[in-house]
Image (cartoon, rainbow, N blue to C red):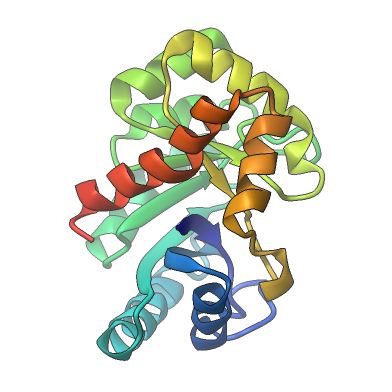
Length: 219
């Protein structure tokens, strides 16, 4: 079983329509994906309803569950709370924040703002987050991401180490922008184990945590 809670369609900078992305994921053994296209103040009110409509149509006929979401990307930290709330009001079931990856100039304070928000579910590729931030993620129920995305994955080992120390919840996502970037179950396990988790911890991160996540959403 595979669940990926951070993928992109051509509604932002992905390569294919939500329908093709869902079909490709289904064929690769996924039972659910969250389409979390990039948004900021310029396109949030356009993208979220489009993703919601696409998910509603696909969920009528496909076995895979398509969950509508967004990735708040490169926002000023002080905008995150307001934009996350708006995304939720427009129907985003999953709100991801583009964290402080070591390979992009993400504004300092983004991780803190996401963890303090209350409407954020996943802090994606959070880079070299602190132990205090991981503890805050634990206390606020925000999942921290281990990613297979090139560049962003450079901090996976650190994220895993700090999250384990704090007791924070981890997920393996792809941040896929193309269908071939989706992972099988074993490939996702490799990402988790490559970050330093043992096989039991990796199964929890790849299987149990995403199952619990979508159950909490009511999906």
